[in-house]
Length: 245
Image (cartoon, rainbow, N blue to C red; front, side, top):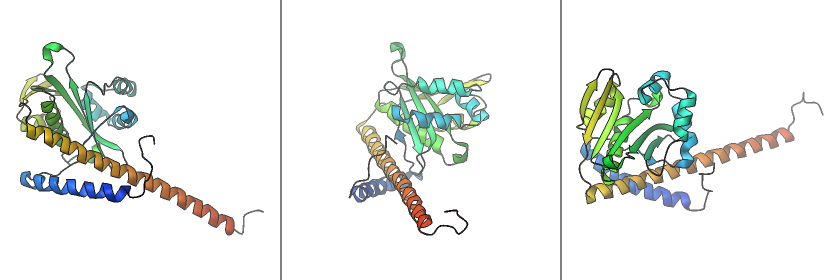
């Protein structure tokens, strides 16, 4: 629990007010587009254990669609171990138990010749399907790529990965099929002040949401410990008649 800050007097009310203010603004914006805001947080090195748990929990079919082959536990572990959180950007959606239920990997090119290109990959927990998480993560990644000067975003997917290709097409990407594999190419517009402000705003909202979930998670753990202690005290005061002295 190294990423959980200690409880502080007055922290919850202040954080809650900030979150409500941010959500009110975002809700007004989302109502215009008919979409629903989903907190998407940037991931860091300390989130590697959660990334690993998320990917290992994927079904064999989901692993196949995400990596393009039937990735074993060892291959997934090597992938997570090799993630570069300095060069690339990784984003995630957490539930209230701080479990990573969806994540995206925005990999920037290491070849100077393709410095303005990036590749997108995404995975969503089976139980979270149908909520638009993959689409939201793609939109979020496009915004970040745009603000980082990326002009072309690639999605390499199996042709049978209908959901991912549909997301790419809906965003305006050109999809080219080559047998069992497909490539989607999305031209990313240049960054504007509006896109940069929007990116910063959404990042702050997601961070506030994550902090609230951490505080709630910590409180539930503390409450469980207190209840366990109280139960132990009760048992000590009122021993069961069959218990031996």
